[in-house]
Amino acid sequence: MIVEGTWRRAIEVSGTDVVVLDQTALPHAVRWLTLRTLADAARAIRDMQIRGAPLIGATAAYGVAIALREGRSLAEACETLAATRPTAVNLRWALARMRDCRDADAAFATAAQICEDDVACCEAIGRHGLALIERAAARDRPVRILTHCNAGWLATVDWGTALAPIYRAHDAGIPVEVWVDETRPRNQGLLTAWELAQHGVPHTVIADNAGGHLMQRGQVDACIVGTDRTTAAGDVCNKIGTYLKALAAHDTGVAFYVAAPSPSIDWTIARGADIPIEERAAAEVRRITGLHGGEPAELDLVGAATPVANPAFDVTPARLVTALITERGTCAASPAGLRALFPEQAPGGADRA
Ligand code: MRU
Image (cartoon, rainbow, N blue to C red; front, side, top):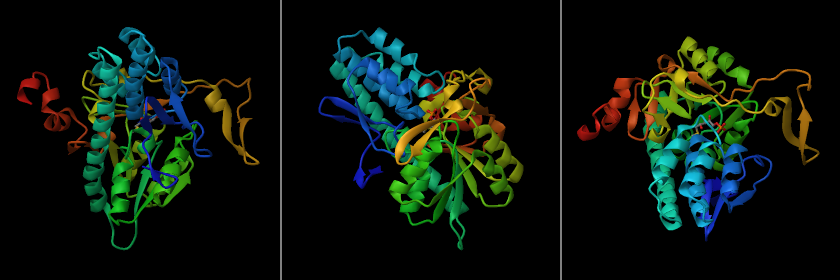
């Protein structure tokens, strides 16, 4: 996608180096990081220099390749990377695809293929989601879409998932405006605002608690969010706060769409309650980062004596999801809906595929 006027990807290979955009420096600074060791790749995922389920998978794949090039074993690489973050199922999916790599060359080739597949997947989600935006389009005003967290190109290799239909609509000349949830405590909404601005898509950042009010006032035509893990029954795990948006959308009759590429679908479980929810450091809630006098600064928000909890994800039950937008089309958030698009995933389905 567009970074300072140049088409870039969130992860790239230049020569023998794997390069990623450091998302902890955004939106205030564009800083590219070179991953040279297994430890670099694991840290980039754990400390969220890269984040977003698809990009976590792609970075882990390159982490395996880098580790094999370092002379480490496949087992050590997969174990180290698997331990970085528990919720996004793309991590497990990507490591499973790397398990047959016998050497670094094979691993780099497989990682590159995972990236190309991700781009194709997101492009397809963009096309299928565009149809939903076209349906919501009104003659006299832009389509107003609310999104939570960042499920844009910064969270994937390119195009994004939830934001891909928005980019497609904008590029097709359909006026769209985006309500961007700030998404405390790590403010991924500011990443969304940054990448929308790079692409020229009109948007407004709102406090996380403002979305329900805007829906009540008829100022939201649809919500589109991403997912870190969607179950085979359509329960959706995504950034903390997504469930509250789904409840408000349900209560106000606003469509609630989830962009769900198949690597983010966990075909082994049905119940959302079985998804491991990452609990991150209290410091992410206690402190806030930004610019002060043009310089990066961190401020204490919550006193050290005050207990803090920081669950990073929540689960939206399938009943609150209007439709899933996958690379194979849109479907109901239900076992039947998903099976219709992914027959090979149904029990005994492989031979029916
Ligand atoms: O903690 P993060 O920033 O990795 O959480 C990211 C999200 O919740 C995204 O919505 C999800 O990974 C989908 S990204 C296409």
